[in-house]
Amino acid sequence: MTDTAAPQRLSRDRRFVRFWVGDGVSQFGDRITELAIPLIAVTSLHASAPVVGFLTAAVWAPNLVSLLIGSWVDHQQHKKRLIVAADLLRCLVLLSLPVAHWFGVVTIAQLFVVALVAGLGQVLFQTAYAPFFVSLVRRDQYVEANSMLSTTRSLSFVGGPALGGGLIQWLTAPVAVLVDALSFAFSAFMVRGVRVEEQPVVRDDASSLGRRAWAGLQFVGRHPYLRASLACVTTINFFNFVASALVILFASRHLGLSAGVIGLALGIGATGGALGAITASRAVKVIGVGRTVMTGVVLFSVPYAFLPLAGGSTWSRAAVLGAVEFVSGFGVMWLDVPLNALQTAVIPDALRSRVVGAFSTINYGIRPLGAVLGGLLGAWLGVEPTLVLAGVGGALAVLWLIGSPIARTRTIDDLDEVQPDPLTSR
Image (cartoon, rainbow, N blue to C red; front, top):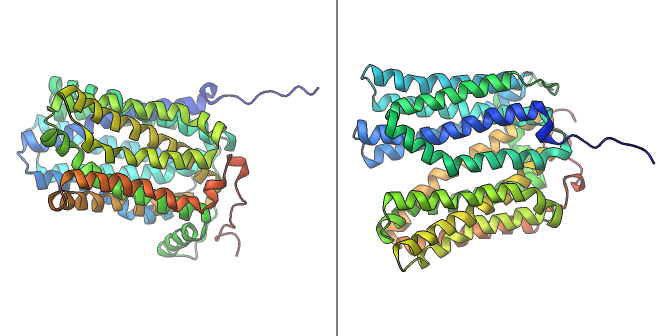
């Protein structure tokens, strides 16, 4: 018998653990800011509902240029430096809020600038993260790594809002943002200490930024795995944001739940995401990548169709809301963890950042449209029918996968041959 050493688990890989800890801390910090910035606008600056809505949109707006940013990032050799820069950029812009608060000069305009710049930092981070990830993690560890990172993110949604609420009440909202700023500084410090041998950059200096972006978009459109997954997740995000625009309204006005009860139900429901992230790797081993993804698509969306069935006592109505969020959160992790691993495996190194940019531009760009339509349909059709429509519509996104090679994929090693890199095959 040949004695072969078992591959090291990621939990014992100091490089990955260092990145994982830094990312986890910044995730909890994000939950604080997600509560604090709207509260600053509403309580301190007396912003109207439309202003708060536009402020939320400002966070997502930079994703519309993700494709261009990703195309630029693909030509940069040191992706780790860009991740550190993205963390420091968000740290500095968030620090401006407690400083302005201490001088009594916080304005709505500043909040918009903070939202836009922080969103831009997030786009830079996510486009640089994709190639950095494959330098940090082996191919056979993609699912495990995504599961660990997604678990931490899910846990941040369970405990983060409570932590954020307590800090905001104790320190005031602008000062609480300081905690998030420091979390980004910590993340930058941790990532900077991660030693990786980054993939060599394949440059096509003869092409303009626009042409490189177009090449990335064309690659996504031609690739059977990426085309199907983009169509699927874009459809899901559209319908889920139709529902998201109405969930809090429905829980408050139609179910008559207080803010505290809604928060408790959503926090308990968020544990479904943590459980889904933990079990996703096991599900892939048992039923395969494709079936896990397809199950996740349905479980992520269809629970919203059952939300109008809530009735009875206050706690039974809250239980239905929590159950809907639990199943939906569980489903999104069964979708995200294996699908992210699959996408990582099929994207050529030279195109990783611009492919992520293409996904973000389309997939995240559709979210504000879904939210606007959700509000309009809620007023026209009624909230309950719109929730049912959103749940069914999102679940039907699985049809994009049924005829695709994703449905036939059992393991990452079973993937069809990656299509030639358009930058290197000429």
